[in-house]
Image (cartoon, rainbow over all chains, first blue to last red; front, side, top):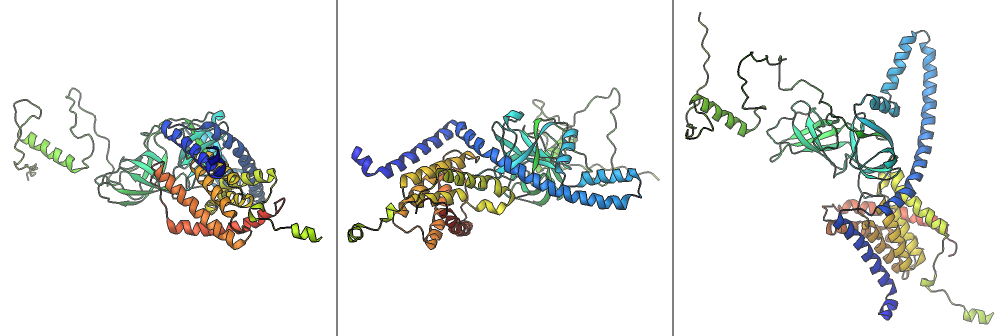
Length: 354
Length: 176
């Protein structure tokens, strides 16, 4: 044995190193756990450096942007001296609001008005995984961040927290191929599942049946079904809709990445919101709300609670009408079944008398 | 004088190892990892540049010791694993093998030749990508994609970068 180890020393060390790592892998797969200590060391060594570099970079970048903004403001002030002070202030406010360069401010405004409790964070680096859309942020367990928390921008959803360290956390972006979230369409209230595509700015909506109605240009919002994202956050706008074999093929352009991705908000305490109202696309005229029921009238539960969307719904409606026509009560014992082959009489409206 | 000339012999290839300051090794390794973490965020095309792999191949070639090569490869791989969302050990196993084979190869070829470095850079990048794909499918059972044309193009780009990077790193050697 000793001879063998001496003779094949290099090979023995190689086999030992590979075996040790295979055991490490097997342990993680078997226990579905993580070897946290090694990760904590590595993240602890790298993220402070990344943070220093990021601070330096953003400092230099802000210095130059502030310098050029200052030059613009000086020139503008010369032109606007004759204008009213109020107009000046309004202009500056609107410019500040619309300026994409001032993301931090818009983030703060959004944070102030958002019903959910959020923590602002800065993206400090990518992870080293091949092809993965996972980034590091400069907030960790010391800021109350936990795995599974939703990450958003003022324009929409951005990702979710996957791993948390003391002063940093890993965020899987919505563009990652393994990302998924529950969504609902704005106009037709169709539920689906959003999936990342590994492409920047694009995603796909799955599990929407061919019979359900989705229009190009329609917006998708989070549905809250996944218990990660609160209901009512924008996800993206439908760019393409195709009929698939059984399910629709829907592609959306993501709204959360509209203004780049440098600062994000982590939802610490989420509050569900309603989906913003929009006119239903297949409704040509404005309809009033249904009238209130007569006092004392029996409350009749509607048989069809939603719109007739599928073939099964149509058949069910046809059978209901046939039952009414033949005065058949469904569910009564010994009553048999109605004649489903009987022709369905259509209602004839009486002609108005001259 | 004559005696000296008679006793002198050219050092064997495997004896011609290169030494580096420990701080240089640690600094370069950290920079390679930081490059992967930070720079690729602002220049997305640079995410195809596998600097930790190129650094592993370089030190393994220069040290000419399979054990040192595989241990350095394992350390770099595990560091890369720790900063990714994958399980620990994937990059570790692959870079251990890369370090071992690169060091074994350096005992047989002249690793100072730029053309040979280009070929080795290309070969080890392809080997690395192929092994990652095999391990992802075989060990983790994930449906990973292996697009050969894309891998070949990226391997060529990495090999070209490797030639210039290795010339730069040659200047940091203590002894030749």
